[in-house]
Amino acid sequence: MADTSSSKSTALVLAVAAILLGTLLWLSHTNTRLIPLCPLHLATGLYCPFCGGLRAAHLLLGGRLWDSFRMNPLIVLSLPLLALLAVRPRWARRKGLLVAAVALVFLYGIARNIPVWPFVMLAPP
Image (cartoon, rainbow, N blue to C red):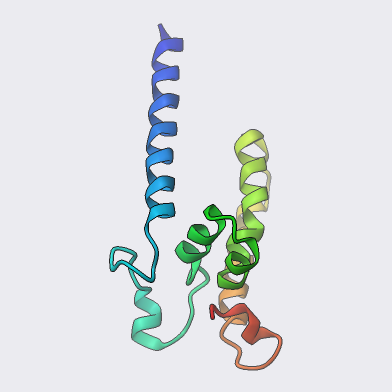
């Protein structure tokens, strides 16, 4: 009985993920207003760690790896790690992993707003 509900839940999660990924592939920041703008960037002109993340995902789904990387390198580089953690969820509970991830995102957010080379390359084009 539990097996059936578990497989239904897995199927539902996969269906929702497929719909979301398909929608993201279909939408583009150049032809729709449905992709929201970053409130932090609108208010301050600063780039948050996730600015360009949806554009990076859209470009990555379209097979444009380099353009995706230029939008948000952190998003693109973290995908293999996130996939590994999905396969090995016990690894996500390791001591210090969450602290290290939060620190990395925080430092990346600071670094991409430093207006000198090479840090300017971290900001979305």
